[in-house]
Length: 211
Image 1 (spheres, helix red, strand yellow):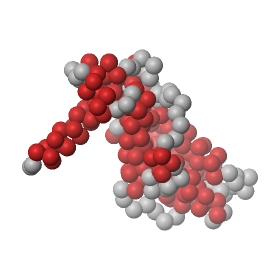
Image 2 (cartoon, helix red, strand yellow; image 1 turned 90 degrees about the horizontal axis):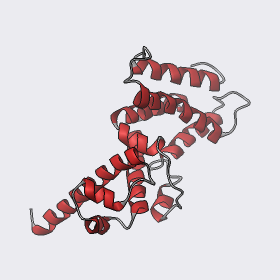
Image 3 (cartoon, one colour; image 1 turned 90 degrees about the vertical axis):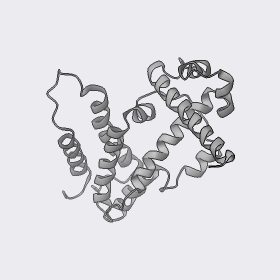
C-alpha cells in the first residue's frame, strides 16, 4: 500500500471513529447535550482534529443520519423483492424490523431520538424521491402499486397514509424490542412471532381481501 492509499485509509478510519463516538453521545446526551469538544474528549482527540472532518455539530449529526438511512435503503435493495406489491410490503416490514434488530443504536438515533430542524442539502435532494436510495419512497411506491391493482379497501386511496400506518406498526414492534424486551416485567413472546402477527394484522386490516 502506498503512502497516499495509507493516508486515505487512516482518514476514513478516523472519520468512522468520530461518527461512532458521536452516535453514542447523541443517544446518551441528546442533541443539545453534545458538543464537538465532548466528541473529541471521548476519543481522546483535540477538537481541532474533529473540525478537519466536520464543520460543526449539525454537520456531524447530519452525516450520521444520512449514513444510517442509506444503510436502511441498502438493506431493501440487498436481495430480490417479491413482484407482488402486497407480498413485497410484508418483506419490507420484515427487513425493516431486522434492520432495527441488527443495528439498535442506528435505529435509536434515526427513529427514537429527537432531531434538530434542518434543511435538505444538495445530497439529500438527490436521494429524496429515488426508491433505490430513499427507503420511504420505496415503501410508498410499493403501496401505490397495490392501490393501482385494487388490493386495498375501497375507502383507502392515500398512498402516504397507508405507508405511514404500516411504518407505525413495524416501528412499534422494533422500538419495544429495543427499549423494553430486556426487562422481566412482561413475558415477551418471541420476536419473530410478534413481527409476523403485527404484519398479518396490519395487512388484513388494510387489504380488500385477506391474503
